[in-house]
Image 1: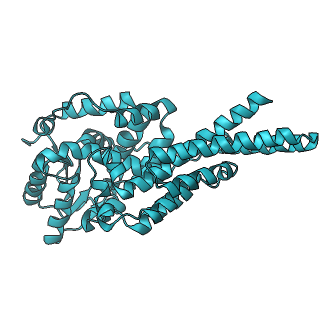
Image 2 (image 1 turned 180 degrees about the vertical axis):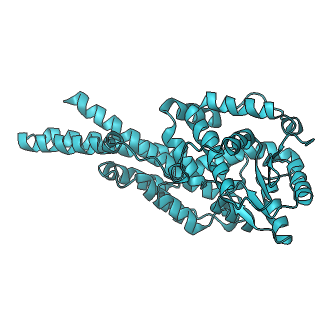
Image 3 (image 1 turned 120 degrees about the vertical axis):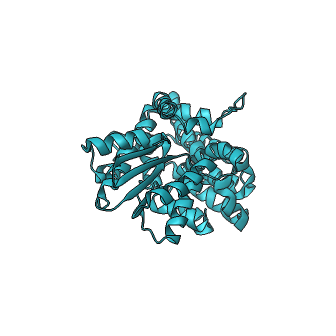
Length: 383
């Protein structure tokens, strides 16, 4: 084929590599559906991303409240930050991420061609990536996303879409930058996508539309047909170790133990000191986190009052309460909710009310966690 990002695995299976931000990819989708005349179109989407893309739905108030309650604010912020970075490239071509996948879905519906969703759930992918990343990798990624770049990077999408070597280099750079994230976002998804393609009836003509960065990996898996993992394994969020599960309980156990010791010794002065150090450290740092998120004064007050209590109970989080108050006193409009995942810069997360609710939740939790550790360190130093 003249197009280097069109790969025929066999007469009934064709892969089309696309850029989710490219006008050319939208045209490629139309061309390949017309030329290949598939019986099935497989797209790199999970059900939640499909629903959002097709309906144009981004977020609603119930969904935002659910994100707060389930402690998913950091994951949603990470997802939207990644989308914002991708969108920066797409603006020059007038396309939003996923435009070619939406075109594939709409055109397939018009032609009455069945559509298969072959990607892993986005929340599972993000959770697996976060769990497999080492601490220094998380710091590097957060720093790179939050840091201001001195120079604007010019990206030639046409050049990228004409060379699989460039794409391979880009994928390898991500793996070098963060091996844990690279394994989940690239290698695992290559295998997951390939296995789902193989599940489709091989007697039918299948056109699989996938991100160009996954093309080589998927091709290798389809040709070798020796999966390393089952779909069930790749869809499971890694369980936390006993040690990681125990860590959140260490500080409460220490504080309650210290309190019991002072009571046993009959030292009221030490009990007052313990209470003061614990309350101040938790309240101040949780409030600072909420202030950085530009939370409402009532949300800041809630963060300060909740943190000393929630830090003693790992099943609760101060950010949940502060985020809920922020949601109620500075309620996002329908436009805020609609625009949230269309934000184009880090600063816009503070100006968008929905983004601010998530920032209040996440940064208050971070401040509360730091406050607990600072308080524990202060108490140990004072013993």
